[in-house]
Length: 130
Image (tube, rainbow, N blue to C red; front, side, top):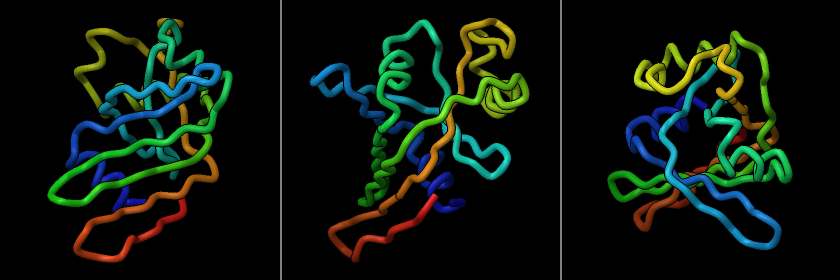
């Protein structure tokens, strides 16, 4: 999983795909954090993306850097513990201008049963179970 997190942090931006009814939705994200051995992302409960994940937790993220792309497909599980939210905010201090661990809006999810694939035109795909 370290290779996946390193890739996401180096890419800085990844794109999260969800669905809303039968319509795909994709938007940029930047948070990727390991807490208690799980890969976490962060959003706000008031956002449409939160509602989409709660309605259908199957998502995929995609990032690109230096000629390689990473795709992570899996299910997101909300972790409503203040410790998980605070850990994310500690890892991304810039978020603390908009979010607080106890604000009722900050939301973190971790990947469950996920598969990461790192691909390029120059090498065979590398698959990593998360």
